[in-house]
Length: 66
Image 1 (tube, rainbow, N blue to C red):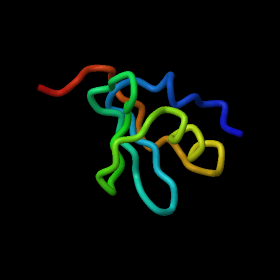
Image 2 (image 1 turned 120 degrees about the vertical axis):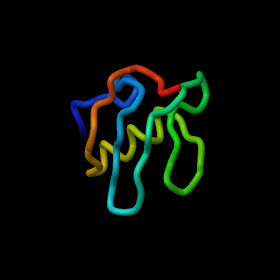
Image 3 (image 1 turned 90 degrees about the vertical axis):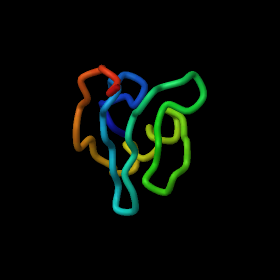
């Protein structure tokens, strides 16, 4: 289990496993992350990735790009 919590990572963070990457962009209440597959997913799904061997590749700044 990871000590990092997906919900605590700021906007711009990137998490990845062996299959795809997840980018926290323009967080909303229901789909905080975007997957490289195009899917919009939530913190719990990214947390599952972290808990099963995924890694944080980048910790964002918390600022949305304009």
